[in-house]
Length: 125
Image (cartoon, rainbow, N blue to C red):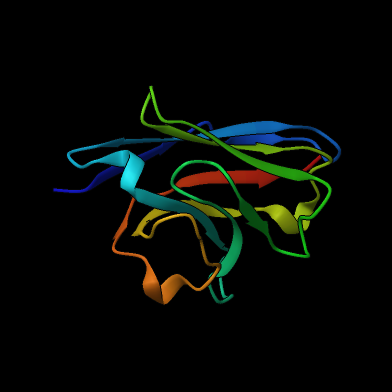
């Protein structure tokens, strides 16, 4: 059974950085693309970034391009989201999700098979 758990969220000042982790278990991690999504109160879920199963490619939403970087370590069954130059608008619950795809990834949330419970990120002074 696919199991994902996010960690690394917290409170940070504008301009600060956080690194989120998504730990996976219960499935062949190397067969799945991983995506990060976020949802703020009263807003729709928004795609953030995705990475292919073998880390050969990635995609990033325009809203975070140049500030957020996605990476993965298949030996550790973990995907990371490095978030720099954080803004108050980045405040949300961040979720990671798994999508069985080979050598591609999508920012379309509807294709993802399993989701973690989320980790809260708050950007405020």
